[in-house]
Image 1 (cartoon, rainbow, N blue to C red):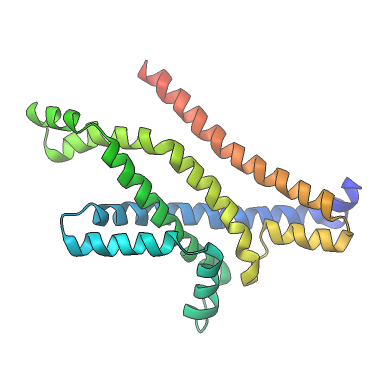
Image 2 (cartoon, rainbow, N blue to C red):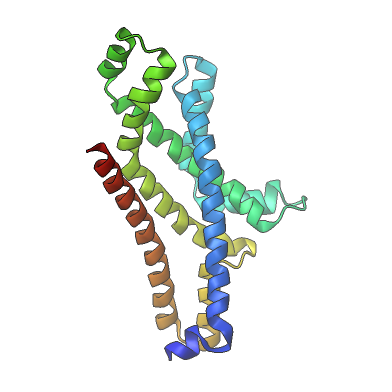
Amino acid sequence: MIYEIFIKNNAWLTILNGLLTTVEISAFSLLFGTILGAIICACRISKIKLLSILARIYISIVRGSPVLMLLMLFFYGIFAETNLSPIFVAVITFSLHTAAYVAELLRSAISATDKGQFEAARTLGFSKFQAFKFVTLPQIFKISKPVYQSTIVNLIQWTSVVGYVTITDLTRVINNIAARTMQPMITIIGGLLIYLSISYLVYGIFFLSERRGEKNGH
């Protein structure tokens, strides 16, 4: 039965293509979302009141909106009359959505850093940039790492809704195979195992990087 569902008639190749689409959307969304999130965080903690207010509004609206509704808004509304590919629209949507979460986790990490170490570095002759780079930034990375890895896993899970805008991702492939083979239970469990494997791969990468950092630290 497993052969009939996942291998026969190049089903495995279809699943692989769907998986690559999921990874592609997730990777680009994470990259652009992290960069944009850092910019929004800078605006959020800025002393310029207007920038701070606009950043707060953005974070509140995006984090409070279902990602599927945002995706449909962009695909069927804002970009409906353009020639942008569905994947590109999905990347835009998930980048904007991820940015709101990254901005907030960075702000929380910055608030949790030891300000005394920064001030001590300044008294030792470090410039503000040097003190931030060598003292504050490593603390931000350490504090935000657990939440950031969860954000990555959540992003991968969020992408499972892209089938609503005609994208053949892993979830849509699994759904199509389940309908074709009339074996939804086994097919969906197989899809869940693939998503779980990706999630634990992410956790594994972070775990190994942390162990490597500890080893280099010693």
